Image 1 (cartoon, chains in turn brown, yellow):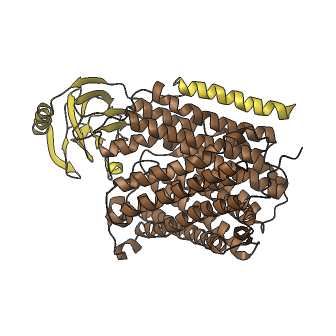
Image 2: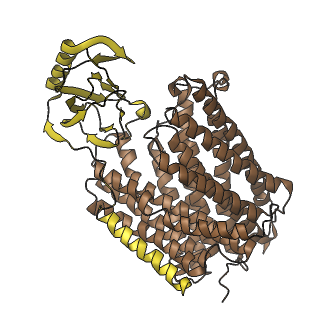
Image 3: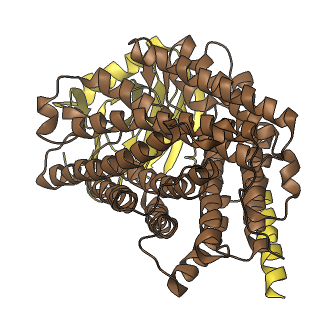
Length: 451
Length: 161
């Protein structure tokens, strides 16, 4: 029986919602990309001396860049996937519309303090924040919006098709992450130091969100492989088992707040760190191995956006995953790892947007030079960027610093950070082409809106 | 048959790993063994200053005074945003007892590959044996503010002073 995923016959309401999520996701990425350029330049030797802004801008811009490119982009993409996979029903459409409104309103709210120069930036892990009431409210409203969209997916957990089943599992894992945030928030005592509060309230759920991001990559691999090769990377049963495995770890994660000791304790922190060692690697490893085998077997069409997305996302994600085994405690080898793995997810999602999402809205991107160029620039740029960070980190450059704080006192460190700047430039160019092409098509009023 | 077996094997492996994770049997050896006692900050400051006066070398590392305590001694060490004080010179192969106290907020002391959390008001005592040469990696691994990544202590092995 053919269990391939097809996106025919989305209702007008669902197409409008899908377009809204896509605009929110890619619009956020556009702003994050501009900030990334500024961040990259402010860490490049010589260039940084000529920039008019200081470290304060750097930290606020870094927080905003991470939240937009890491949280909003992926979560709004999850909202878009939910619009594509949720069963057609009028109540689901209403829920989707409310979800989209809340998701967008939340982003607007959290941007206000950052742009108005209000609140202290905090570079805590996973969800860095600007310490201002509006920022937290914005995050919460956005999170609730995405949660409403995901609630529609629960019936899809019975699907035999791998892609909808994977999307439903990702939605379930997101709800589990949200539960972790809420439980942590309730458990952390009032009066806790703001830095410690931010770190621990987002710690457990932040780890669970990495399972969601991994599932988004696997959804992309499955959907694009079905489109390009006619079959998924692995047999359908194994594909569904991979998603179920990640969802299982996500669903049991809130239990750690019961069995994992004090929410502010060391044991609690380390248990969630181990989640990424124990719970995350196996499913993407199995599906990635299957995908590698499909790519070896061919056909390998380097003009096809689906194939480029598959090949580059697998390569960049695998390199980033491998780098994860060589992390230092607080040097730039950590961003080397996560920029590469997240770059892999990003490349997969770019493929889904161009190959599945835009055509579902009646907008085509073709296979022109610009389409191919964005994958090469972004993919290879992320690799160069990660390589530079890895070399610099191995030489002892601390992460999340800029200017003299980086301590670039050797030629090796300077060259490594120069490589980071070069990679940033290439990746940003690729991202700009993607955002430009996708936004231009999304903003154009297509047939879908008039149906 | 393989098609049916592979998903089951993956799910079975996942269930085993998940149970192991929940029961804390998938690692967790990276917690530094320590003793704990409550301390008054002013009294601890007094011990810290006495150490600087008695064993200070007159040098400093990034503004932190360096001490060369006697082998086997107890060393009161303060952790605050974003420094550990004092910087240490230890003799090769000798064992010391570090009394670690966080002054302002929660920090941690990651020494080598193991770590202990430092909570204000509670002193953590850890045993440290200096290697034959070089430096001991020592830094805060609990996010404590914008310059957290630069909160790195200095422990250098120096023979025969």
